[in-house]
Image 1 (spheres, one colour):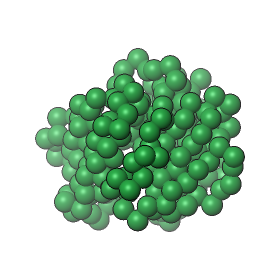
Image 2 (cartoon, one colour):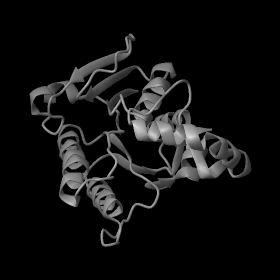
Image 3 (cartoon, one colour):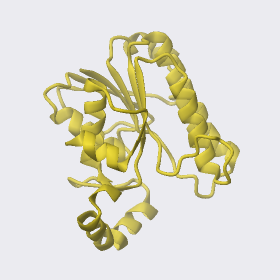
Length: 221
């Protein structure tokens, strides 16, 4: 399997990249983003783009892949709806449209979030924008499209968020996260399970398009 990965330097993306590089069924990973991962691996090929929203300069390099794992995203904290829409909806949909036109046999997997609003009309700004993004992707002519909606994600294998606030929050909450994982294992997933579940969905499909934490953990087994 050949994979295109967006957001490989983020917390989720790091975990997905790790699992792709470890999986013998994954032949190649093409990482696209504004910064390089800093990793070296025979499977890994990287393209650094100043503006990932415009893939036309590298369109020929994007043909022949089996899946796109879109892990690129930002927190909505402190952002206006217009700004959040530009970096969430506009970017993701532009990438999706380009890839679906280049190769409709592709499987597209998007990291969304628990609480996303599919109606696009709820009170939560980020949930509306994410819902609009999901709906747009599900309407594109891909072989398959899956929306991953995790809640709490525990980083493993030395992976850390690039956002300082998230790092502090994880450090404070880790005892409660571990307790919740023991008492209610399907309330939390991990960066490792996110990667394993994406690979499974791309190779074998998933039972539904919208996948919550429980579904992600099941796919990762």
